[in-house]
Image (cartoon, rainbow, N blue to C red; front, side, top):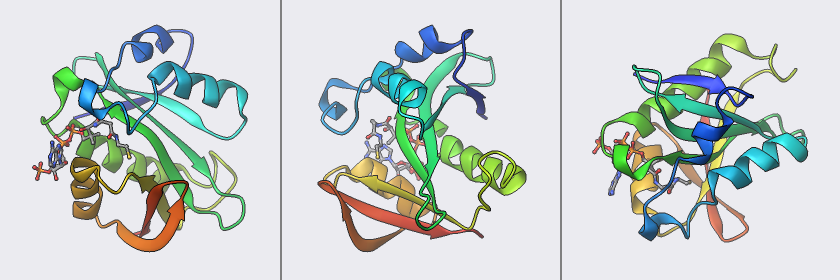
Amino acid sequence: MVTLAPAAAGNWRDITRVKAAETQREWVADAAYYLCLSAYDGLWRSYAVQDDDGAVVGHVMWAVDTDDGSHWIGGLVIDAERQGQGLGRATVRALLDLWEREEPSLSGTAYREAALSVAPDNEGALGLYRSLGFVETGEQEDDEVVLRRPRS
Ligand SMILES: CC(C)(COP(=O)(O)OP(=O)(O)OC[C@H]1O[C@@H](n2cnc3c(N)ncnc32)[C@H](O)[C@@H]1OP(=O)(O)O)[C@@H](O)C(=O)NCCC(=O)NCCS
């Protein structure tokens, strides 16, 4: 249903066109910000989310916490025009599959646990993550709640 393609010369312009709905912009940054974070901060890796036709419909990035080896999901945005079609769910599943298949060869760290943080009032995202087995841990990251999911 979706393919994750690393951000690169051939797709970064399409990624910058991915936009959350106006009412969702308090929860996420612009895709261009995430691309710069991945390019210059040395931690995150940005991916284009492509639909079955190869169109870029979203952005997601991931990073490994070097303290505990947990694999973090960040910057998940499905373009407002394409939300509600199962693409967000497919994106998280695709990332978990990628780690299960490829780690530790991508980051040098074995995949044991996925983690993410989300604004407590972001009901849509919370519903999605809980339904995929993520559980609140009681940790806070800035103003967001942390959810974790052990490798299945
Ligand atoms: C959160 C987001 C990625 C979900 O992507 P999506 O493609 O719309 O989600 P899906 O169609 O795969 O839906 C998956 C689940 O999300 C939840 N969900 C999605 N939109 C929702 C909404 N508006 N209200 C309540 N639940 C919602 C539901 O649990 C849904 O499960 P269902 O299919 O059983 O109904 C998307 O809404 C988005 O980009 N939001 C703005 C950015 C954002 O908040 N990102 C998360 C940062 S932590």
